[in-house]
Image (cartoon, rainbow, N blue to C red; front, side, top):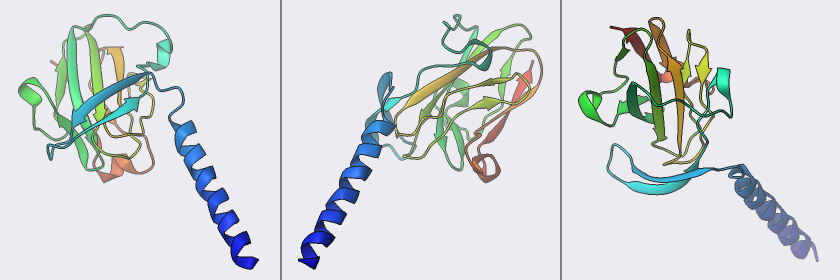
Length: 162
């Protein structure tokens, strides 16, 4: 009889955990198959694009766009002249609209925040999930992950006005 109660509790805990995992993906608005810097690919859902000053609004077409893959040890450039660079220096002319899109390279929560521009993305939790931040370039800045101690672990880079 005691064993039956034990298994019922274990089953209940498993069901609870599975429910939390499913609910954790609620509100997912995009899916993307992306490879990590090790070359593996995994499809997963992601958060919608956001900007602190314009949550829920449409983001303008950017003058500059960067794509970074997010890992605890840093952001890795995925395209163009920053491809393969960890925490590359991102640049734009003053007044340009800049979009930085991140792809989660691991199953760990990440986001991207522009310290001085006051813009931030949603937190993405799954490998392959995507989010972005769009802002008007005004000043030199830092981009970083605001989750836990990720910034201190290496998820920080420079943004410079050219």
